[in-house]
Image 1 (cartoon, helix red, strand yellow):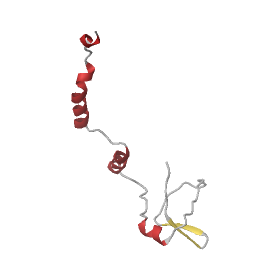
Image 2 (spheres, helix red, strand yellow):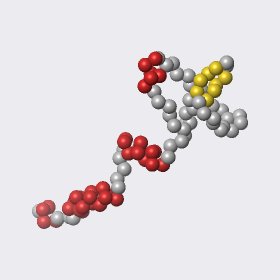
Image 3 (cartoon, helix red, strand yellow):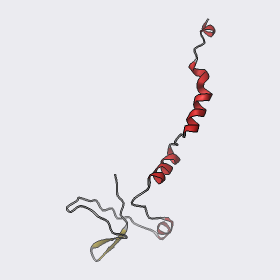
Image 4 (cartoon, one colour):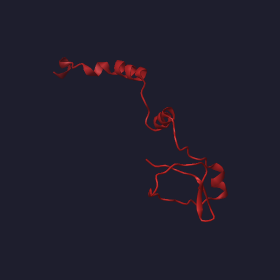
Length: 90
């Protein structure tokens, strides 16, 4: 899991936009992005914690998630493929 913490670097210290609780002596990697005026206007902060429904919605955009109705509809449409018609083999 990756935790993205936004903030500013001021007086040789990183100041996060909101409080974050990390264990002491935890190794971290700091990536400093170069921003242009255009990029800073279009960028939105990444939420630190997403609710389950929000994660499912994001996942569904890429892969899709079938509901029970979708599954039943698929099974109904594909039931003809389950039958083996030996008379057609001759």
